[in-house]
Image (cartoon, rainbow, N blue to C red; front, side, top):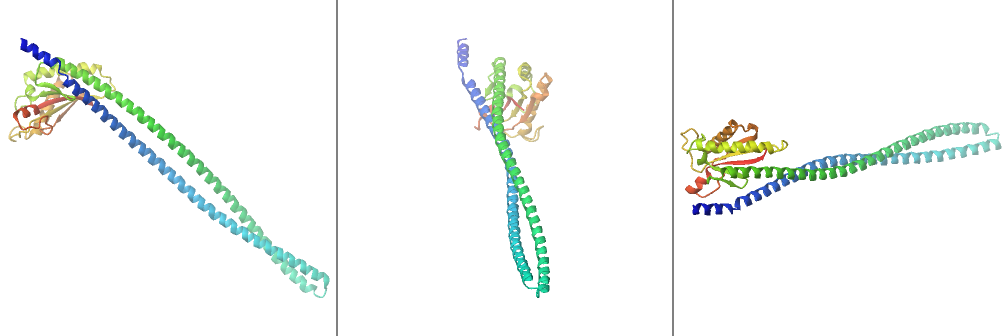
Length: 343
């Protein structure tokens, strides 16, 4: 009796499972926050890339219109030079006409020849005036085109300013969304961790009298011998009693977890590293571990646990708790693990 009381005192001061549980919870929270950060960075980079493409297109249009404006200004300069030349020619023709008229007034003998020359000069003068008028019309048209181009450039620059402002606002919104998402996910992780702690606490209470049932990190571990005979996948009678307790604890927990938390209980099957003969029902440890995890899931479903809250997975011998090649290590590695997590 004294020895039993001593063992209970030793068990009461064992803080290690709680410490491991706290460290696992902290690690999970950090992993969630890192995932959220990467997701926010991905959406931010996508938004910035699309904004940069719009800015590049607008800048290309501005450059194209600027080049077109320079070309039109060169055409206007040529037309103005041509107009100046025409005006100079017109002035020369008018001066020549005046000179001939003076000659006509001073000498009647040469009047006929002067009249002919005046007629010729008058025709040339009229033609020069028409050319000058066409040049003036072309200059006016070019001025109108330049004005329209300037308006387009102004509109594009305004659109570019608006786009840049929207880009700044979008980046601010994305940053704010990332912060909100981080807070929401952190709260969700804390909620799930709290329910996981409650769940493990209840399992400790109802299963604490079994030495081969323990907590490792964020998982509740059943040694395979508790549930299955050697090489078998049918849950034995003692194992069914333990699984019935587990099913009741899950059903109680389900009533408390809010519906917005999309949780599942993952059942993982593990074996030791001793290969199967290959001549029995299961060819290798993969199939054996998967069959045992599936058997636990089916038993829980038969006892009222919703099937959409359960997941079965087999890991064979490839996730050992103890890497030593000893009988004790192989005993530890043959196990069923339960983990409460999100989908």
